[in-house]
Image (tube, rainbow, N blue to C red; front, side):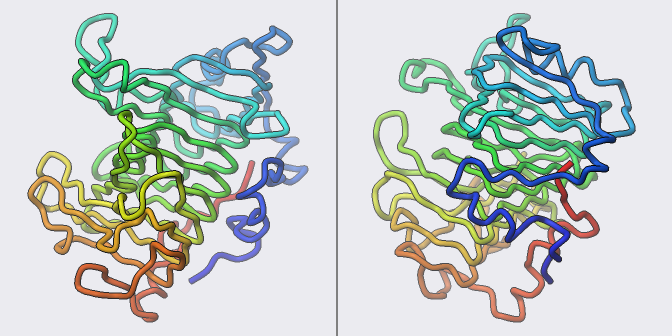
Length: 351
């Protein structure tokens, strides 16, 4: 199955993957209906922080609120709570690099009231509200591992989503370990995320979680570890057996790292839960030489071969022929592992 032209902007933004200015346009009716809150560091907007604008969104707001963020670096933690759906955070600069939301908490960072943040609590931006959108900006966690070797817990999330129908379009999500946490509000809740025309970077498990997530027409950049070594894992899904996991589609995997040093993923049975069936499918993508010839790895005592990991029609020096250590989908299987199979009745459109 494939999405129609009115759906996910799949081909309309294709060239934008390598450009800076391609932004999808909402209809005039959508724009007219959306309320706009403006954020500017220099005081020229209604708010000087993104969180202040989020706080101003009415609880249980029934319609779209656009938080328009002027260029600048906003060093802050942002949380969009579950009772504030239909929020769009959009940078107004010419480039997605012009508007940056950044902080440096890690899992082991001490909290002011005692204890530590933990992995999920380390996020620079946390999205817990359904129907969230982000466009034309950068979300970063710049925790410095080299200077914090004595700290226990180097996981440092840039963006955490725990909601359904999350559209991330034309953004950069940058970090090292555990960059992009794609979660759900609860084990029994569906959490769908569609990432398009974007860049995601990191080194260890940097796209992970139990959400049903698509990374489409985007660039996944592999980074060296804090000590300059090349080694890591792109995905670490913790998918429920009756759900779809992570789909990487029509994307590029690159980065200035050593050949044969990165796995496409490993199976995360969160909490040692044997009922999970982690899933990653990488299809129709270009893989650099950094990808290992045996691209999947075990985790936590669970064999990846008992879970759901596959490729389909990838190209590039990091691609390889099907084998017992490198399963490929058949053409028939691939028809059931397309973007629309992941998103179901949700057709992401910019608003």
